[in-house]
Amino acid sequence: MSEIKLVACDIDGTLLHHGAKEIAPAVFEQIERIRNKGIIFCPASGRQYDSLRQLFAPVANEVSYMCENGAVIFGAGNPGPVLAKTVIGHEKAMQLCHQILSHVDCEILISGENTSYLITENAQYIRHIKEDVGNNVCVVECPEAISEDIVKISAFCAAGGDKYLSEFVHDWSDYLSVALGGVQWIDMTLANKGTGIKTICEKLGISLDEVMAIGDNYNDIPILSIVGHPYIMENAAQPLKDQFLNQCRRVEDTLAML
Image (cartoon, rainbow, N blue to C red; front, side):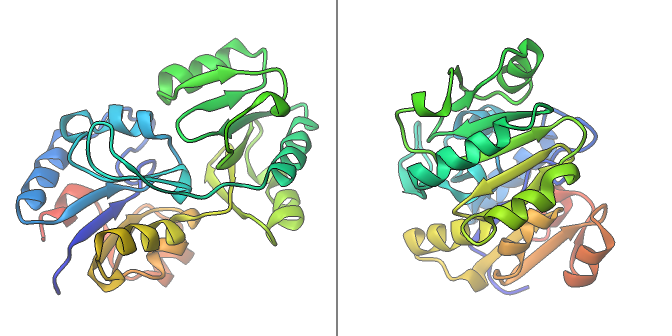
């Protein structure tokens, strides 16, 4: 295997499976081991910065973070510096928010740099985002009440993201990246994990050929398609396994090869 200087790894479905909320200790052991060899580890996720720092607590200050599907990039540190932020235009953001809110069976999550804005009276949904996902949460009355830049807008569809995916792809894919972020989530950003990894590489002086990326879902295609060492999880959909031939059963095992 040629020299690798950075590993970008998806979270849900890749490091976490079947509702797991904690990363296996063996993963942190491998992150520490490869760090000692000069290899940077970077979680690449739709989650926000604080949520990822909690998840990676044993190594929280030592890794870089690709948050909100590549819309916000943080360097290592406590807190790490914001290396880049890709903002959705205000008028477009408001239009998309109100489209999601028009569906009574959908909840909305509007992402700032490190805050999740919710517009809901559903206490269970609020608790899920706060406690299960671990996000900083602010409940507002309407999208117009948000004063900071918006970097990602997500629809939580109780009946499954597939129900509305084609609608949002049709209406927004000319402007935004639209992808399933999980069974019930549709994530929409100007950035994606591909643009995110390009930004990290530019900031750190690393070639894309020197990057390993590990993912499991269709929203990982933009990053897997451009790095030198793409790996797809064994439990991924068959079309993804047909496209990316290197397969990963457990992330710690793949890291152990480095």
